[in-house]
Length: 399
Ligand SMILES: [Cu+2]
Image (cartoon, rainbow, N blue to C red; front, side):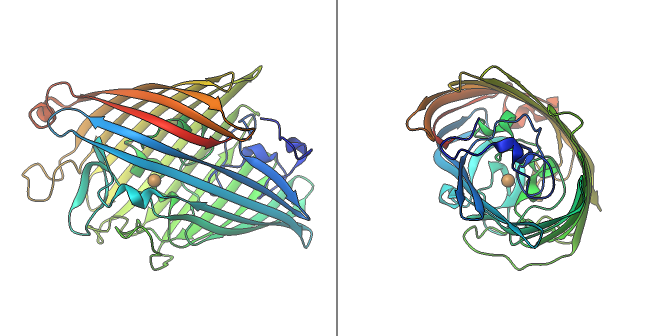
């Protein structure tokens, strides 16, 4: 999207972390392809350049089968960014807020979803946890080293460490119109809200090398507050955007006691992802392929694979799909004889959203999606033979 009203040329504006187009910026310090649409409201206030982006969904969620449930809920995100020249470099501030805590502590129904807790005692199973109100409050500074390179620091409380692909909700066009979280969230990008992150990195042309020390504990069940900061976990990521159409990354993290209910189990997490973005005329097509591996110590090693794609036509019609295959070892509570066993689950969601522009910067959309699953036969008795799920939703979006 060209910038409206501000008279700035987006491609000449530099990124927060180095000498590259601003459209490469995504969640935390992650990158998307340069060709990605630069959504949001952009402005200039003195030396500051700013960006505001966000959306609010109202969702009716029906998950089928024996473990199914239904719920209506609101899901939202508001992101503000500001940057200015300082001391020969670039100083930046980032914030991301969400009213997800209003969903309720037990989140929303989502078959085969696992991770985090509602009450501090039992794990959430077949439900997606709400996000914290404070998703990101971060400060950054980058300084050129040579003409085509820069060094940067990123400090967040909370913030996102250098691991995983860009978060599904933030400027990953292939995922941003899908209101449900991926089943592989806790294999790929669940660290996007971390209470205590410090990252240092180096950008050289289209490469980025970075390392983080951060709080590996996932946020607790109190979603409005700040958790205690710790720097007990580490991660590193290499990112490469070979052309304007591609964003590639590999990353590795050593997470100290990520799960609140299993504080003595550490995880090694490995992820790799590729995002491809193709603009044509006024349309966009973006596809993300991502793989994540969690190696619990002690415990199982499990993989998650995600393929998602969205095509946006005339800025009004968006058709999307997400296919996932995950190995889940948390589908049964500790009291069950099946606790800790690894089960395969696959999911395919297909959907559509129609957006009507309300003002230059705000659109209203109506959409829906349907999901079907594949799973181990041993799970038929638990989930039912062929559960089907759907979501209907309305969305206000800043674009
Ligand atoms: Cu999340």
